[in-house]
Image 1 (tube, rainbow, N blue to C red):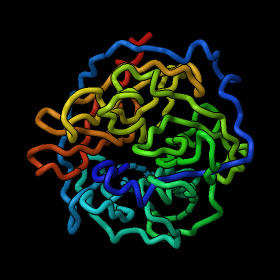
Image 2 (tube, rainbow, N blue to C red):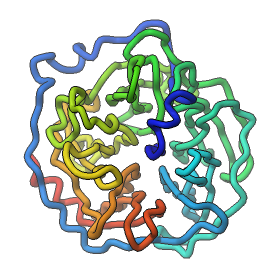
Image 3 (cartoon, one colour):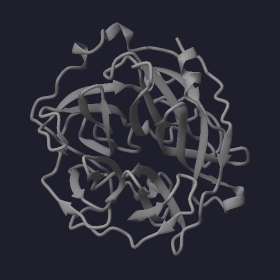
Length: 346
């Protein structure tokens, strides 16, 4: 999610979503003693890495990519706008292949109110696109809205999937992303309590009780905490930048679950600390063991919010990055590797 200028914008914004009145304890999914799980860094050898994939037609920055295949055409949904003012619209582009060429369409207009309508998480199933999208990301009282489309261009907004729970650990929630794990349909998202300086979100999970994308949604609780990510800045760090965000879940061929998310390194200059990292668990509720940041920018800069696509033996990482050669403006990139690499992770 947009990170820059947040300190200046915190007085104006934040985000939140809500579901049923009660939050299920994550203890039902994992022993509390297993929370402090540390993982060893694993080198991912990406066989290709194309960056940037394309440049936007009329905006400064492209963020929060979510590629979706509808059976014949690839679509990418995301955030287009500028980090200068944290002003965003909903990007839509399409291509015959993940590598492009990408044709940018008119931004998607939804009848949704909020100061942070952005970062759509989209899935295509049975001929229907389902979009889950935040309304805020830096203030309480937001919603995770649900919209549907038959073609990716024309959308109907339904009832919100989840709303904020004031004065709880989910007082602020954003970056929802849908996932099918086993026979279940899930929403993974970032959530944080009230804050005075900088939001400190962790990763949370909800499951559809109807096993459809129409809910109702039952909160499972926190599935990844700051303390479980050794390469992430700690909450008491005087130079703390931001929390864990941009999470996505995807099932690996061996049945385990890959969590793809964004961390902020403990050291370094602002504008160089954001990284995509992977974590793996045997069950969707965790515990997740981080294998560390998986992609380096290759030059001064950083990378973040991304979506993993697995097709056959290949894993594709569709990510956002800003580096010196893009004048530190955010663009999309695409890296690919053999998914069999992850069978070597215990």
